[in-house]
Length: 299
Length: 290
Image (cartoon, rainbow over all chains, first blue to last red; front, side, top):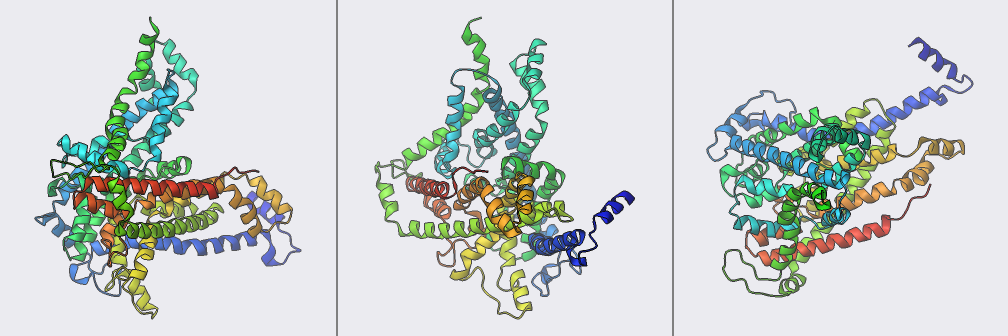
């Protein structure tokens, strides 16, 4: 501390007026930057705070002005109502969301890592052709496949089941691309050593490459989970019975079907959001690094 | 051991993926085009062949052009807003003010929400009678507005909502791009007497061009497919003033069960996205020279 203070002191040029000294200028800069950034941060967070505060506000007060971010008489009434309302099996919806998102994540990690290993670390005729063939499909928007996939699911009689939501995720391309990149950065020597020790190809993949790629697998897993948890369009199409719905579909139905109680919708939104916020809190390093390094969105 | 015995395991790694790839990606792409050539009502047994009849109908369909106009307007406003706000915030956060890591965390938070959650919250924020925005508008003494109930406001408000929801993504990508610009370039410029604005326009912006291209292309593609925001906040209204292409696709396919026409609509959308992507490359592409 003392040393730092002294070096700073020696760098002060006393011939300059106070407001032109380097340290002072820096402070002014930072103050201006914060003054510009803090309103953005408040605007970012305010709607979320509003959601939670409305969820805990008694129904007869949610429409009141002035808006209270901290409810004067906080209550769990909206949540209680939501859980016991006959046509809103929200706990079942949450269970559906968990089953689907976890299965999708497991499927994507398994299939994509196997494929990325072959494309990134193995050599065989046709490899690059196949890889480029897969990549070109990235250029066609997913909307094109909605109708044919729906028709196929109908033939398979998978509509309105978990199958319809889980299996199409296995065709995802982005994870292959991401993991292939990562696998290629692992030094060859480690693999060679494993092969000398009698590891087969699958053994090398399973015992060497996967454990060394933990961070990439975690990032891909989180983004896949979030994407599946948040998806609205496909589940909306592929499901039609009330108890099969996922949370986002249930939430949109709740918004439409004349449930005029304000607290109810906000409580449902809060329940949908809490697991996501917990995940974001725990894995924020992986998520932020993932976006910055790879340009993954999580949607 | 023959060569093929040695190579076989390599191919085995690919088998599971290619099953999914053909069943749920390559197959449906081809099958979708096939469907678009028929009058394909999912509930009826016979599906008459139309050749390009669906595409001709699409060309003459006023609702398609209206939904496309709304979608283009929405996407342009949203991408513009996202890029400007993301760039602005990232340039400031890059200076590492106190608490910059918290700010980074906060700015990305809305991105992890579902569109359903975002729609439910923001429908309340912009509610006419008791919404948060009108509360503050009223507080400063301005007349309150029907934000989602008036044609002139509805698309800009939906865009604003989407910028709130997604600007964290371009923000982080821009930040990564800024951190990749070597610091000595700025120092050299400073010694040469270049001021901050000049160094921003002459160093930062040109060097960010590839990042900007990436963001603009991916953002346009993403926001052209807008559905959830309208589906939850406006249902395409008032009138059809916020009716988007994908909403139309949903109605044609799953309310009227006209799968053939819906499929041609999807290919129409794909064509538009391709054109917009090529335009973006034309204006933002090109090499960067140090």
